[in-house]
Image (tube, rainbow, N blue to C red; front, side, top):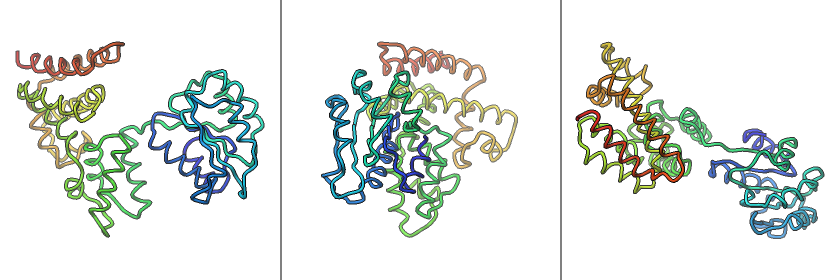
Length: 333
């Protein structure tokens, strides 16, 4: 079962007897958990029929005993097991018989991070169509996600505005919704979000710093490039994420540069490169500072840094600083 199918069942009041939410996108998991609670327990406060456990502390017998208890003055009971990925393997095995014959009056909800799909418990969940995995949204999926969120509130967002929003905020859904809430407050009764609104409201730190790192490398300003990297690290941006953003930025620069060499007009370059028209002049200026060989060498360095960061015991922050140093030295030595 995927997330859309789960929400459809909840809207139809067809609440599964067992639901296991897992994955690496906690925002979507928590939103689904709230929807399940509202569907199972319409009353805001229902302490009699709302029981919560934590995977590391609870025993299988206790979960089953609570799940088998009839609800009090209600149609359904909700039993939630948080951090279910911490349930010991032996306890998971004891829960298998319940999966085969769950109590119809109870919704047994598990919430977990990463799971081991090889275990019989999870294989049975899949057979029961009870496992719902939430994966992080890709860069390609984010614009649609944002449009869908705004459409539900009868708000439209222009293509350039959603592109700018994604480049400035990134893929963290907590940050995305925080910025969307600020945008909705800013536009008031308006029904369209445009570039000027995004520029006025959304925090610009990450996008501007990534662009300026490229600028600093292009101009040979090592001190500025390293300062910007340290600023992003201090803001909590993971070094591997900064690396992926730099790779994306340089790929875009390379494409822009190749199109500029072909003497394509800026508007066409923006369209082919998939960037908003209002940033293309800056990308063209930056791209002119690099040759094709520069881009090839840069991507070799990116690959080396990526492999090193993913190795055990690697100091990713130091590797990122070393990468910036190598990029500047390779171009200007």
